[in-house]
Length: 132
Image 1: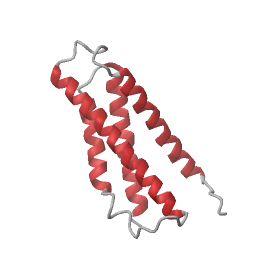
Image 2: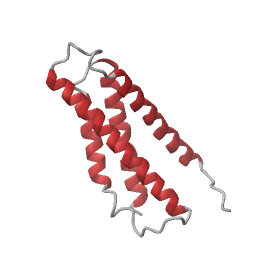
Image 3: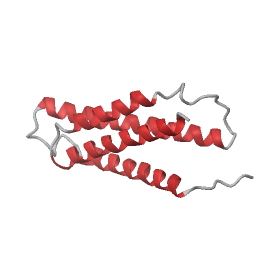
Image 4: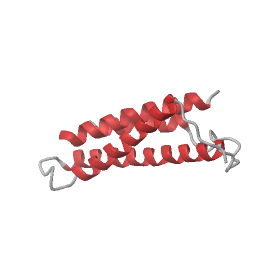
């Protein structure tokens, strides 16, 4: 049985992804229609779109990490993960979710924007790591 050995960079990456997961869960919990009744409809839609985009980006990021881990452990033989995941598209998409989060209010705005920027950098670093 092969042991999984994590370097400090791998551990830091997993901690950042876990932090984004927790922050998204907190944002979904905090952002309810009853908490922000003073927001206009278009701002609520923009913030909710940013939050949904963050969630979609995170789910695909976790899927990529799972596939790459299975490929690394030789449980899955997929020739090229770059063909499945478009890193440039998801980098731009995550940045767009951060811009959508700018239209929110309070803590939800801060969390959506921060998650968007962090997801943008994670997709960018994954793209750099897989371009070699």
